[in-house]
Image 1: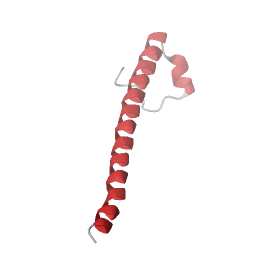
Image 2: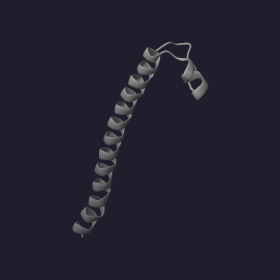
Image 3: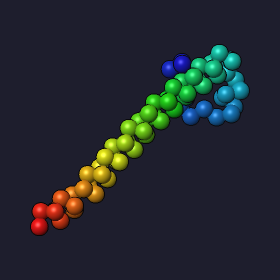
Image 4: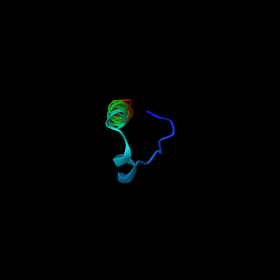
Length: 65
């Protein structure tokens, strides 16, 4: 993607772009979406682990009595 393109592309700017540029933007956005979805999955798994650890702590304290 060209470095001089603005970060926020509005309709007027997109209309002026060549099809190849539009395809490049779409592909870059698709790759970014894949990366973000992967990161979300990682964070959800980490949250699950933290919840499990938190849920087990009170049980360990109760069992020690």
